Length: 183
Ligand code: APR
Image (cartoon, rainbow, N blue to C red):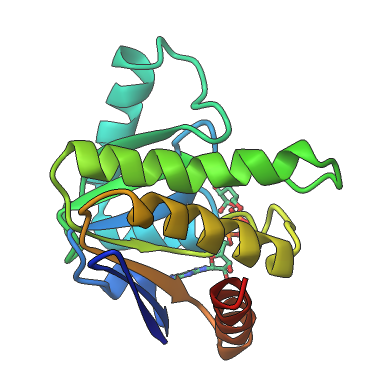
């Protein structure tokens, strides 16, 4: 499914984000930036050891050894990935509290802003926080798509792709996008 927003496009697809040829792909990382399971593990495996090295440098040089806070985003090269860049963002762990939605929205907003600041015009997102972090996917899809749409409405960005890892997830996002369109 593809939607035009103020001259930009928002596209939903099913696939493996490590294969995407957009200029940047987004990693659902954890604060340590040292890799993990899920999409984090897949991206590090596909990118190779250089990615971890650059992440460690970011921890030391940009974060003063601290963890990347939830909702924030940093950017690295893509190494062996087809994408030129990886934007790492830390999604909220679901706890049922209201504020988590805003933190998830920050992941999408800050990743898009970072890409825009770097002149990147195509980016792929996974469904942040809806795996190991157990965020309910219906709420995550609505939050993600509203945040991306609001960002695209006010600027000339290019293409945003949601790369869903299953048909089931794709249908949740497709329903959410249709609902937003009718608001
Ligand atoms: N391509 C696209 N999407 C993928 C891929 C892939 N190769 N692999 C997994 N996914 C999907 C999952 O199916 C889920 O829908 O990414 C979504 C996010 O799931 P997780 O990767 O578990 O990420 P998250 O829920 O944000 O939890 C982050 O998990 O891997 C650790 O280090 C990571 O601690 C962090 C936590």
